[in-house]
Length: 228
Ligand code: DC
Image (cartoon, rainbow, N blue to C red; front, top):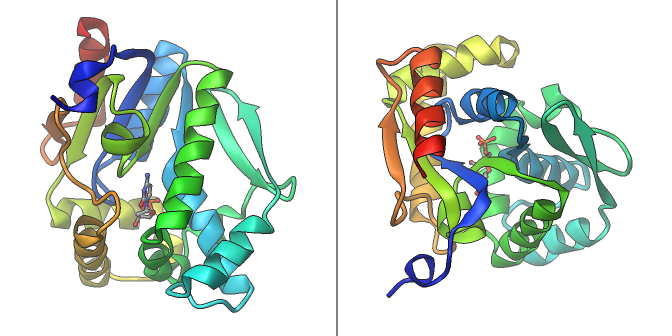
């Protein structure tokens, strides 16, 4: 019997996982507003760490170096509307920089270190003390909250995901083929890493958003929250 079958469900968590560009952030943020829970973007946490690693001129593959940078970060949380944002050194990490191609290219390597993942998971679990959570990432339903009230795996085809990424972040200055190639590379790395790989976990409901509008996806998820 798995852990998630043995223990009771955590009533106050919706876990949303899926690959880059599947619509997780937008969907999770809007769902949180609809049901009045806190949205948490865990990818932003890995991105903020990656930016600090690059700024310290540490190689993303150098686990000891990455852990050194991590131990020097002073982190905090800010509640703004229905969102819990991680602050680093009292400041929100700069959006443009954490979403840049430079950070996107290195974040999987930083996120593959076991020490990094253990630290992130501990911080993410602590947030339950702040209130009910809609948390999105890659391992929320499989590792962080295997007993979440609702576990969702959002998916979409790589081409659709690349187009969405471009609409969201045109400032990166890439074309659709470059973004799709980058997404496929990152999927592969996230799915193949030894520690907490991206996968559909036991008990998760899968929703392919390729041909669905945002409203249709939100309607569906809200219904699932009430069913669980
Ligand atoms: O969701 P995103 O594209 O902002 O995430 C950035 C990277 O962080 C992604 O390539 C994998 C990693 N990540 C992770 O390993 N676990 C999470 N819970 C969230 C993100």
